[in-house]
Image (cartoon, rainbow, N blue to C red; front, side, top):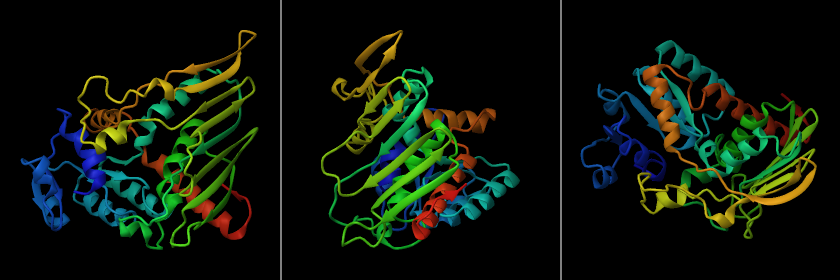
Length: 337
């Protein structure tokens, strides 16, 4: 079980009474047994898929393997959740979506950042109309790291690797959730650090009728800047990334504690706008994020045929924009969608 399984999936499956962690696939290690002694550890995926007690498979392996492993699980009649990015190409998205429908299986992508406190708060600001009609939005997902990742698969120059597929999948998904599909995309993508073979910087401009959305990520930003800046016809909303869930999970704190994932008050976003003829500037307390909501919705989808927490068609749209972005970067032009 790797970092993604330990941090982002197992804690929510193991603490939700509607799920049971039955088995994991570990080629050589036995990390699962340390935390979940009742789970079976398999040395091959084929063996695990033969277990009839396994109804749902979480694919959280390197990006370039998503297509193969999702396909294997679906063919075995299992429901599947796959980590973002979905798969490297739209063609592979189409094939897997069709296979899931044929097998009558649930297929969903783990876009967990939809359940961050930051994003939930921004949704509320827009839904309530506090800044009026959107004119411009800028989302950042920045880091500072001069070294390559210890996860060597992330540093191989292959389709599906690099900053745009990794961090861009979050930002693009959030933009689509808020604003729908853009009409066109322009992108600047490159490897900024001399040590990097894959892209570690990107800037996307998404063209919408009447407004623009800019998405940006870089591995050379030491001083944090706001993760979300929204300007509208009445005012602005500015918010730093401050969701605390990942930090808690990395410390081994489970989502069962009271007051799970409440942001510090000093991380609240700032609203500067006009309401009822009055110009106001005030802090807006953040809503509470919770990745458990993804799994609650997933259970309802599997057992009660309710709406998926993340529909694969939505994640296919993310990949479509990523492919268009690489085309734009190569040809130095706008790419229509």
